[in-house]
Structure formats: C-alpha cells, structure tokens
Amino acid sequence: MPTAVLLDKIRSAYNVGSIFRTSDSAGIDKIILAGYCAIPGNPKLQKTALGSLDSVAWEHHCDSLQAAKYYQSLNYQLISLETDASAISIFDYTFPQNSCLIFGNEEQGIDPEILKISDAIVKIPHYGIKESLNVASAAAIAIYELRRQQPNSY
Image 1: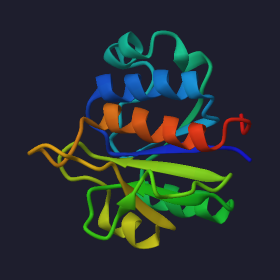
Image 2: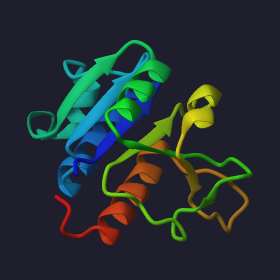
Image 3: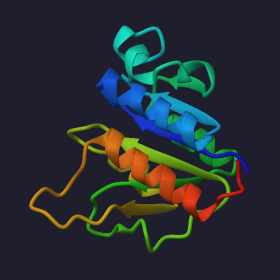
Image 4: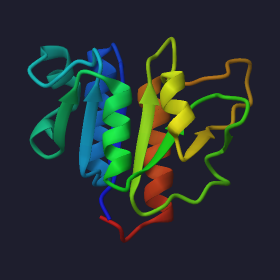
C-alpha cells in the first residue's frame, strides 16, 4: 500500500525541502503540500531538497482539511504527529500499511479540524524541557519509525 506525507501549512521552505529529502530516502510515495506551504520552484526548498523533488511525487492543495478528507476517502489512515495530550507514543503505535503521516505548522501545529478526523494522533516522547522538535526533525523520526515497522512496504 502507498504511504503519503501531508504537510499542513509548513511555512519554512527549508523544512519542506528537508522533508522531501527524508521522504525520498525512506521511499515515501507522495507528499501533499497543503495550505501556504512552499512548493517546488522555491529556491530555498530546492536547496535543501537536493534533487529529491524529481523522485518524490507531490501535489498542492489550497485547503489542508479538504486534502486530508480527500486522502481519507482514498482509504488512507490519517496519522497526525502532534503534542496533543491524548496522543500516544509513536513507539507504541503500529502503523497501518496505507498511512498518511500529517505534520503541522511550526508554531500552530496541525489544524484542529484535521486532528478531529485523524485515525490516530501520535507523539514523539520528550525528556527535556522543550516539548517539541523542529518539524523536519520530527518528520524524519516519524517517517523512519514507520519504515522500521514496515521494512518491505516500499
């Protein structure tokens, strides 16, 4: 089954480019750029993506919630990575084969309406005083945890 990544209004082109590079490395099938995300053609994104724009399919949707609903209608399981109190540890969660990992805006996180329709909300455990990671770093951890669990799915 395919695996997708949905970026909900990630404002930093450098973060988007880094997530493209990680997605290429991990064999992610598609990146959905939603809302005011930087899109290919942006020089900052291209700088950090280092050629992965040619190897990872992508599409842009103006509305993040509608994009999430569309992928849910295609039988993707929406897995939101968020620091929500109800989130379970990413290391205790079993990813389904048809996952769509969702990562949110650097300051506001994932749209609350997307969280409401998510099939699961997971978090990366934190042990220091900060309760979040840079979105590109968090995406790398989540994408590779998914691949660790499903080594033959790509």
